[in-house]
Length: 179
Image 1 (cartoon, one colour):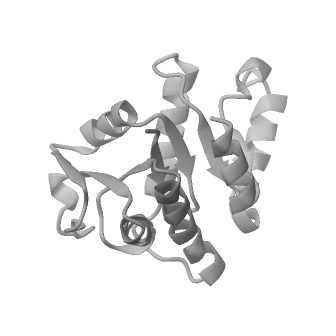
Image 2 (cartoon, helix red, strand yellow; image 1 turned 30 degrees about the vertical axis):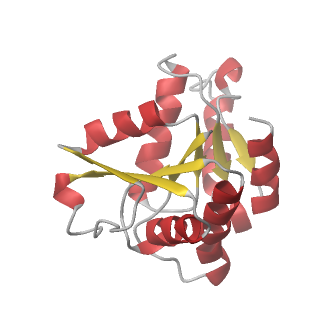
Image 3 (cartoon, one colour; image 1 turned 90 degrees about the vertical axis):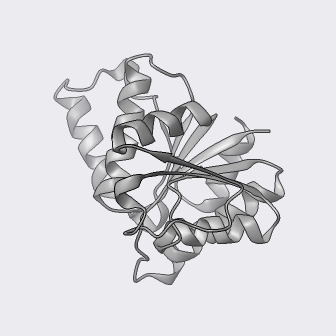
């Protein structure tokens, strides 16, 4: 069974198309017989992801630090829940539990998780696939930043393939199928 870590927000976006992403991704992962690994919350995009996978009888593992148990409201119906002492431990455990990473649109926390897992791959701490879902151009600015950093030699060309970009959920599914 593949375990897919999904990074996404604890808030719901205004755009209903973006809010549909975790629902459809959660269903798809569950129907593949794979497992979702995520932040453990019941709210926002995280809650939508977990609810959708669980509704399809999928396995869902949450990893939440004690400090966020009330803020993100721990999902009560998870297959497995790990409580950690802090965010650093949370991110390390999520990496250990997962075979691949999918990054959905989100806020600062989502970007933090993306950049940390990306940096760990660059440093050779893991060699697991990372897919950034740039649905509706949400991460266009991040793509522009990456190109600028490459042109200024802050990022080596040899490391520019550390993550893949999917431009739609179907594109993301195809990339995940190839994992």
